[in-house]
Length: 326
Image (cartoon, rainbow, N blue to C red):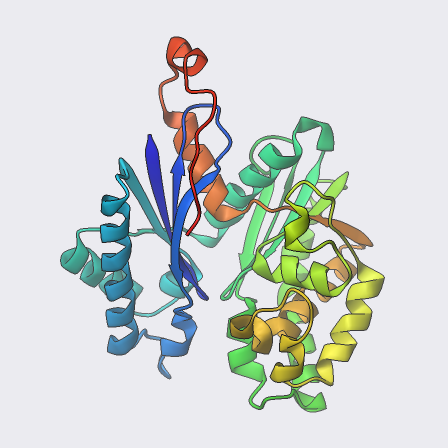
């Protein structure tokens, strides 16, 4: 079947199409996305403005039509922190559904952490032992830990890179006073969450997921994307600490020149670095590994797990499914 997954995040809205069958690896067929950055459309009361609501609706309509034009059999659509924490999030979801016919399912922070953990577990396998996963989004930061397919502990805190940048950093380069307040805020909010994931036991493997972690690892010297998904990409706390201090003295334009940093995310890389550094320090993690799978892949895997498996159909499937990413 051809499956469409529409992910409404704080930074991007991304539709991914895949040809899948039970037990298959979720390999992309086609992709359609926009850097909507819903956090830009929050008003002083924390509501998404009409402009933001209409921009989201317009892209969901595009995504719906793109999926139909590419013969998608099913469309899974979900929204994360940008919607769930907005004061009018429910009204925005209702507006999108009424205009497009697409129902966006709101995923809670704990669910987001757990589903991302599922993807990480599938990527690294059972031999990885007890896993601790850290994930930085635009609006929230998730942590999950455990030794099974789903975590024993999963938490979410409002420490997303875009959210923190918007709140604490008001110029092109951060002032020392802004950075100090940001670090204090991150440390204060992370304390209880760190204790929760520690209760799941000492991890055998610590993992970083999401675009922010991938970019931070690339800044710290990890292999570039063109080397493929199977190359190990470790990130060491010592390197991250050094580069976070360097980013404190950079403008957004200067951060944009760092390896692995896109123009749309350059401004928020400092906040992402501070969250990652603080979490690793508080958890006494010296090195983590980057996982290319995250929430979106977790949603796909959950869907595949629920499909009825026809052994004969699986055995007789085509030897190769050829697609493209556009």
